[in-house]
Image (tube, rainbow, N blue to C red; front, side, top):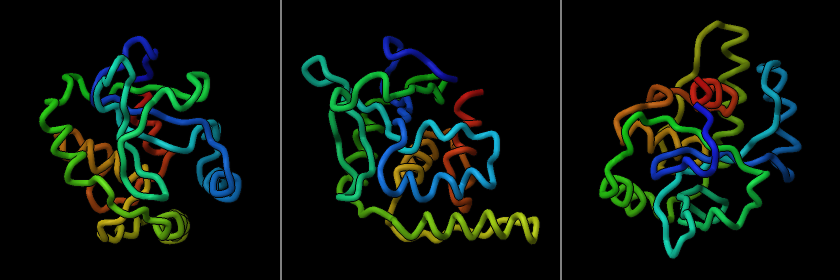
Length: 170
């Protein structure tokens, strides 16, 4: 469910307003398959912990998975979601971050996901994702949710933002 900034806690999910080249190229294509998607957001991250009064997030960027300050982005460009009924154990969050820190970005997933959704339209079945230790922000969030005991999508499904947001908004 969507929550306010004042309610966030470790384990919550952050959606960032869409912008940039990849967003401008790929979001219209995704919109063809998900007509009800509003195209507001694009990037996802995980709320990690507070450091000196600043919320820290764990996110996958082009340079790899890393911890960043949430305050680097204006609040009006963020939305927050609570997926876990109970806050995940802090040590599990830290273990996850240590395990995935620096993991490479997976630009191939965008194209594989597009193929999957076109295959769904043509053949009415999904194409399995490739497990390769490379991540998009969507995959990293899904991996986190699975490791914390409440998967957003099944392991072999290519995550795509409109599907994830539908689940997070419930």
